[in-house]
Figure (cartoon, rainbow, N blue to C red):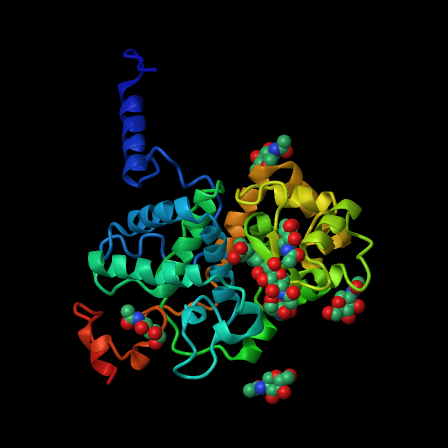
Length: 360
Ligand code: HEM
Ligand SMILES: *[C@@H]1O[C@H](CO)[C@@H](O)[C@H](O)[C@H]1NC(C)=O
Ligand SMILES: *[C@@H]1O[C@H](CO)[C@@H](O)[C@H](O)[C@H]1NC(C)=O
Ligand SMILES: *[C@@H]1O[C@H](CO)[C@@H](O)[C@H](O)[C@H]1NC(C)=O
Ligand SMILES: *[C@@H]1O[C@H](CO)[C@@H](O)[C@H](O)[C@H]1NC(C)=O
Ligand SMILES: *[C@@H]1O[C@H](CO)[C@@H](O)[C@H](O)[C@H]1NC(C)=O
Ligand SMILES: *[C@@H]1O[C@H](CO)[C@@H](O)[C@H](O)[C@H]1NC(C)=O
Ligand SMILES: CC(=O)N[C@H]1CO[C@H](CO)[C@@H](O)[C@@H]1O
């Protein structure tokens, strides 16, 4: 490689170039830069906490790595939490608000009843660790986005960067707003595309983001519309028979896995399921029926790299939906409560300048 006789100015230049690349951290052993990213929203950046909380990445990664050893299902819970946060009035952490203080928040609306309590707990636990290391500088909405990212990576999926700098919202999402913002699993592609187009997500985003169903669980009630009173003719017969055993009409309290081929691994097998008519929800399987989405499904089923590449693009896009930045919103002391509703805030030291003072 090192050729002494080569033009010295050229080798100096390439050395400098290599150095420059290394300094901009592209030289780390595990690369996180192989993907295309959508344009970043004003106020968000990949290096937002670089000086304010230099160990943020490793705090989140190490905590989740440990947590997933005992409960890999938590990864699915955290990924879904980010989706719900972003789809309902933007990625502002409002999904985390405990509604009991000021009326029903997103947690009380039907689609969210199946969000995992362990995911909410993990966000609060992470928040406590981050506070201890850096003070109250990282928003809960950013913690959710980071936790979703690491859930994908630690489950076998792509390693990607998330832009940071979101602020936490002050507005509760009402039950109605939540219901209108989150599509039901009984939706067909027409309905899904119409919901997504309201927030500027397109057909490819729909297919790529639905790939989140490569991990996690679903309750029978999310898909028994395809079993009773009549079986959905699109569904594979053996698959349907097994689902009927898991979810007999007389008792639909059970759960089953979203992706029968590799339920805990973030891979492209979800799309292989769809090709085999083993998608769980109408919203999943209809993407292989509808002409607008069928070829995208097939392209992801045969090429995992393509799926990963598109998933990264689409989830970073999703992660920037209606974010609050700059001086908007706040940095919550407790992810479950707005600072103004937080009885315990007086005991918080090292809070973000000015914010705690204006609370009471
Ligand atoms: C396109 C519209 C979508 C619909 C209709 C939908 C619907 C659902 C439903 C009904 C469940 C099962 C809830 C239950 O019965 O327990 C579920 C689970 C899940 N969804 Fe989606 N989803 C959609 C998009 C997404 C997106 C964009 C992501 C993330 C990128 C995602 C990630 C997940 C995960 C990881 C689970 C498993 C959660 C767990 O095991 O706790 N979903 N989804
Ligand atoms: C919520 O939606 C229901 C049914 O569409 C409607 O009756 C109710 O008035 C709405 N509530 C609010 C607060 O908008
Ligand atoms: C899709 O669902 C909507 C209701 O959300 C319904 O009006 C429409 O007929 C359905 N389209 C097809 C092709 O099934
Ligand atoms: C729940 O699902 C399991 C696994 O498919 C099945 O063995 C069990 O009988 C189901 N429980 C009920 C109450 O149907
Ligand atoms: C359904 O099955 C579950 C688990 O087997 C059981 O705990 C529950 O009581 C059953 N519910 C009904 C309505 O039979
Ligand atoms: C799969 O997708 C990747 C990423 O777009 C692309 O570079 C590669 O050529 C594709 N592979 C095949 C076999 O088409
Ligand atoms: C955080 O806020 C929730 C909701 O108000 C409350 O139940 C909980 O006790 C608070 N946690 C801490 C550590 O203050
Ligand atoms: C809109 C939607 O997905 N609603 C579902 C939310 O979860 C409950 C309980 O699992 C279902 O009954 C709803 O259909």
